[in-house]
Length: 162
Image (cartoon, rainbow, N blue to C red; front, top):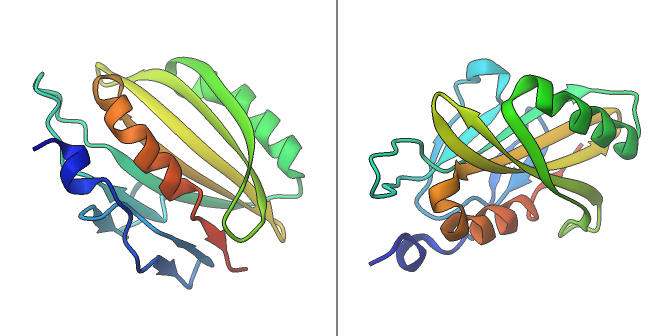
């Protein structure tokens, strides 16, 4: 059984965070961590073995910050800062998306290295009512193809309730 067979769908009931005003449907069976480590509001992770001893679990995390920027300005600032923040970062994707509630967001994606692991991510960027939301989905490059559709479909369910 592959991971796609067992964990290829999203939870029907959205994870809801009233304090930070958002909802998201996460992949079925993923764990939820609300300890706010490293400034991340919520951290969702899957269990996975890529067969190469890679212990990095596919994950999605949510971060917010107050902003006075537009979505385009925030996306540009993010694109400029990622190569400085992530080792060997290379942007490989960028597109405008419409979320399930009709809100426009931007998705940027890239590859980078972290603690020796080659990783790939997608980040949903959303600006609403003076607040920026960054919803990042990350997985090892070796398991990205198995995780990308699930991660992207989860990101697209994100709704800001502020």
